[in-house]
Length: 374
Ligand code: GAL
Image (cartoon, rainbow, N blue to C red; front, side, top):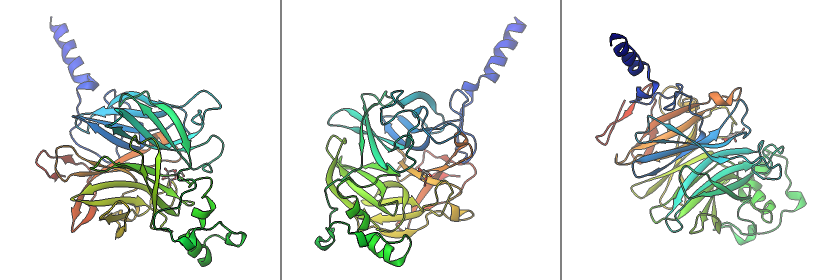
């Protein structure tokens, strides 16, 4: 009997499932409920009822997609259960999402009208580096998948952006091929050099996010024009296509890694600069309309390591259910030598004087009382 009791005690104590996380520890190894380091990079969260679903890139040592998009579920944001692969890479060599392609920054939204879950992601075709610059879309009947891949493309082919002057709506001429980084190049870029160049084929689409507004309209926000300008595009009612209404945000502003959220009728955006896997100072913006104009609010990160955004790059901002005015910054601390070891930097965002502010905490928790306690 004594032996049995001892055994029982050991099982209870040693059971990894019974160890519940009760706080965030940005940059530490975050284990799922089975004790494995969470593999969901460049991620985003979709929530339904009391459940949060965290989708992200399943990485190996390299960043190339070998598995697909993984999904985890949680009811408290601290403890995550592995729900498997939401979108699997294909073994078919002819598939656009074949093993060896690049699948980044997956974001899932739910369409009320069709009852479908829609995943958008940045897709680069196999063996083409980052040249393809496409956006891909997949669909599912369940938040955990399996998602069925539909298509990918460069969006907004043959349509000019809203408010694009008629005088700029011309074909790119030979003499428009400026030497990069010269003042002439920059001026031409701002005026629409690459919009014109890519008019027929569609606009480049790399780092991206999707945002659903209160009225149910969804927007796809992506880094375009050789990563020099963000494009904001409206999606169709079923969220599966672009409507042709789109705009350029901060032409020549070099913004990547966009994350959008809304607070008191104001839209906020957090982005990074362009330094690849290396961290840089985040930027923040606000606007009264999703179409802009977007006002620059500077680096939202404060304190030590603000200049490198606490060694992270934005991927999503979560509006926390049931905790009013609480926003969670989700960033990636990339490890390009061993991508699977990338870490998650989640921190509270406070809106102070109509400006988002992100402060570092070694450990922190969301309180039940509408505020954030370090
Ligand atoms: C980063 C981007 C990542 C990935 C990487 C590739 O700037 O945010 O998602 O594309 O470049 O170098």
